[in-house]
Image (cartoon, rainbow, N blue to C red; front, side, top):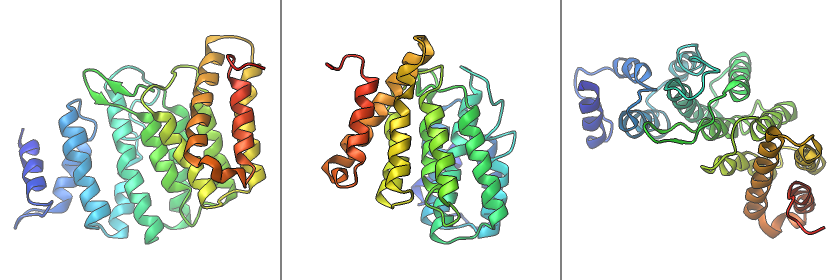
Length: 276
């Protein structure tokens, strides 16, 4: 495949274009094949190219990145066949999220999005996180899907943007809770760690008050009181694993902030094997 050969050559040449090559021509192809079932093309060639050009070499202007965002969040990319499960469409959606995270990282360091553009992107990411139903991590025949993790990466960048006020932070926490307490999948490929990064960032950067964070942490354990069902078990196990990830990441430091106690008490409520 010509694109594979071109991307391999670009990697070898540190992502420098040769005379006569145009950036936009490559971008069109990258977007077309962004969810290719071949994990080598999708994960090892296309995404690193976006990473190099967006985050490292800063090849795009703000206006070009805004145009790229419009493509990445359309019905052929982030929302391509949204709601489908266990088919190859998941790769298009989840690998459209990753460059969005890179663009948000650029924006928070050198802002270029207008408020209305930021709001549209926020709504798109939250909608995606609520509507993604294919929550597989590693797919045997296709490599990483990782919708929960890739979406978490983008949300972690979103909450650090200057436009993200307390209302945005709380919306993101609500979306994380919804992902943890989905009725489909117990996460086994460390998605809980990627989601814990979001709350870790909020704590570290004081993006919400201690009381707001403690209330949300304690609210994760409410599912322990739901009627027993498979959905309840999924919610409890995911929430428990998430709290453990967050607690051990924050460590003793948060004893001073009162959040460690909230994490421990919520974990105990969720842990049906704990001796009470």
